[in-house]
Image 1 (cartoon, protein in one colour):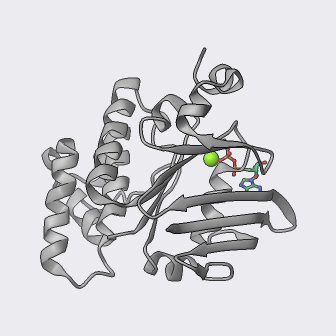
Image 2 (image 1 turned 180 degrees about the vertical axis):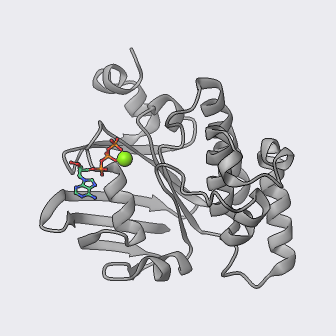
Image 3 (image 1 turned 135 degrees about the horizontal axis):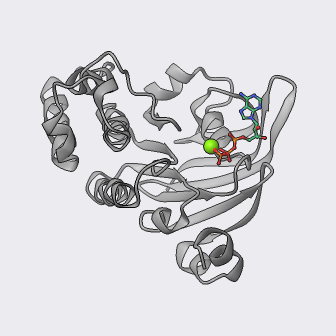
Length: 236
Ligand SMILES: Nc1ncnc2c1ncn2[C@@H]1O[C@H](COP(=O)(O)OP(=O)(O)OP(=O)(O)O)[C@@H](O)[C@H]1O
Ligand SMILES: [Mg+2]
C-alpha cells in the first residue's frame, strides 16, 4: 500500500515558485531517496510534505490530502520532520529533548521504551543524557534530532541531509543507525541526501531533482549502475 503520494507538486516562497512538478511515492514501511544538487528543491519538497511551505498539486498521506493543513496537524497524523540543520533545543538536556519529541503521546510506558530504544540506537546520547543540546557535537545533535523524531512515534520520517557537516565516520555511524531503525521499526522514510552512497544504504528507490522537477526516478540498484548518477553523486 502507498503511504505517501506526491503528484505534480508545486511550491512557493511568497510569489517565487521553486517546485514545478515533483512526484514521489513512498510505500508503507518503504524508504525513498531524493537526490539533487544545491538548490534543486529537496528541502522544499520535505517542507511541502510537512506543511511549512505553500504547496499546490496533490499530497496524499494514507489517502488523506495534506494540502492546506498546518504543520502541527500534519505532525499529528504521524509525519516527523528532521530538518536540515537539525533543530534540536539547545537549552534543554538530551532527555528533555526526547520528552519534547513525545509531547503528543499519552502511552507513557511505550514512551519510556522508546527513549531506551533511542539510547540503544545511539549510545553516544546515553553518555550525554544530562548534557544540554548546545553542548553536543554536530554528530550528537544529528543523533538527537533523529531520536526526537522517533519519540513522536511517526509512521513516516522525513530526513534532510543527515550527513551534512559530519566527519565521514560519524556520517557512516548515523546512516547505519538509520538503516537499523528502518529494519526494526517499519517507519517509512523520505531520505534527502547529497551523499548518494549513504542514501543508497537505506533506500530502495530514489528520485533525482533538478530545478524543482524529477529528472530521473528508479530502484536503487538501477540508479547505482547509471553513469550520470555515478559521476554526479557517487564520486566516480
Ligand atoms: N525561504 C526561502 N525563500 C525564498 N527562496 C528560497 C527559500 N528557501 C529556499 N529557497 C530557494 O528555493 C530553491 C530550492 O531550495 P531548497 O532549499 O529546496 O534546495 P535543496 O535542494 O534543499 O538545496 P541544498 O542541497 O542546498 O540544501 C533554491 O533556489 C533556493 O534558493
Ligand atoms: Mg536542502
